[in-house]
Image 1 (cartoon, helix red, strand yellow):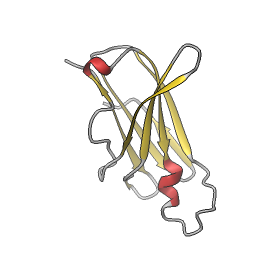
Image 2 (cartoon, rainbow, N blue to C red):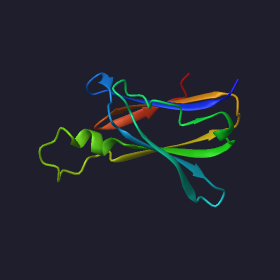
Image 3 (cartoon, rainbow, N blue to C red):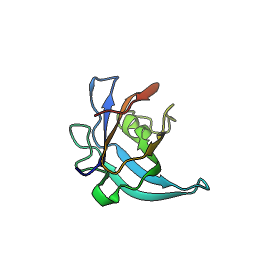
Length: 119
């Protein structure tokens, strides 16, 4: 079985999936340098349409997902000069197996967020 990395974003302030949230996936190196692997956007269900990594793309190591939630929350604000409390939410995590499913959901509201390793 091939492993994969997936994500989704839920807007806790509305109790709905967060649509069209930009998500970046970065690989982290030992010297803390980052290299961009992929950019995607969430769909109407708050999910990215296809796995961010799967099969041979998965290399054990440290990664970072960056969720652009400030852009998402600012869509409903008339005064776009308002600086959001949360702008970009970075989540660093490790992958140690090429055959496991790593699912990383982001539960977010304008004032906070949480995450966990899902299934």
